Amino acid sequence: MTQKPTIAVIGAGLGGAAAGALLQQAGYDTKVYEQAPGFTRLGAGIHMGPNVMKVMRRIGIEDSLNAMGSHPDEWFSRDGRTGDYQSRIPLGEFAHAQYGASYITVHRGDLHELMVSALDPRQLHFNKHLVDVDERDDKVVMTFADGTTEEADIVIGADGVNSRIREKLLGTEAPTYSGWVAHRAIISAEKLKAYDLDFEACVKWWSEDRHMMVYFVTGDEKEYYYVTGVPEPEWNHGTSFVESSRDEMRAAFDGYHPTVQALIDCTETVTKWPLLERNPLPLWHENRLVLLGDACHPMKPHMAQGAAMAIEDAAMLVRCLEEVGAHQYQEAFELYRHNRFERASRVQQVSHDNTWLREDEDPAWVFGYDVYEVPLKQPATSTEEHVA
Image (cartoon, rainbow, N blue to C red):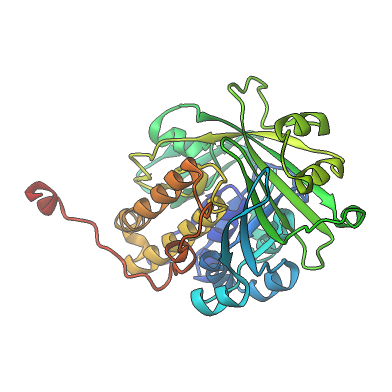
């Protein structure tokens, strides 16, 4: 092959959109296939730490993100019942100076729309639900539910926790229900003015077995968002989420601080989602197929780093393809896995344990990371592994 290989990205979520944009910028003929008919402004918030804002800088949307997001000066952790502070983690100007980029909270739908705008619209295809992948000697043939087929030299599975590409590599296996659910709701900040309470820009309310994370998702602070972590023994709904209610929220957070009660009182609609996990996968790639994000390391959202890990994955994958040469894709894939596995697994474990920033600690290992500047670690050769 004299030209760069053609690449297909399965899934246009945050990780897939990042991969597609970075690959297209690097000159790869890259098509992105998304099973949804289009994008909607889903009612959820997201944290964008300095580690991932550095990738947004490369994509070219950092300034736009900074303009649309909320910029909390601190991350507070507070006792759910007494309101006592358990940690105060400096963000704002400190984060920018210390870690090299902003820390923002933003509406996930606004972020997604901005990331998708960085893709070549001619190379983004909706209503493409992947049903089969056939690897041949010189290409991969993808079959979609609408009966169409497409070909590519390399296929990237950015298709989430129920990844079809992961199934191709490792077989069918359902993700593990963690025993926790997340309630999600967006509140009009105008309603909060009726309360003589302090609604901070980024605060997590904790008790022994549950929490509520709260933050603004727009720069004008008109929308206030919360997401919970609450134990629930079983998930038998057969759907990705169900409707919840204020009554369910009151029962789940009975005895919590008046600020939390006010948030529940102001809730108009709230949904409940199962939190799914997998153990670290033994295989991230094989032949012409490679995974990123939730397809290979789904995690609880308790560090607010799940999407960040997918976006970091995308950046490292493109970096490794450029470093090795994309025609040596298997070598590039192994270099990518070798430089992502330890970090992704560590974040996965801390997210599972739900200890992140509960007490004062130094978050530099997360926020100070730069996927473009960290030295690449070379995989051991077969001889070195035998000696070890």
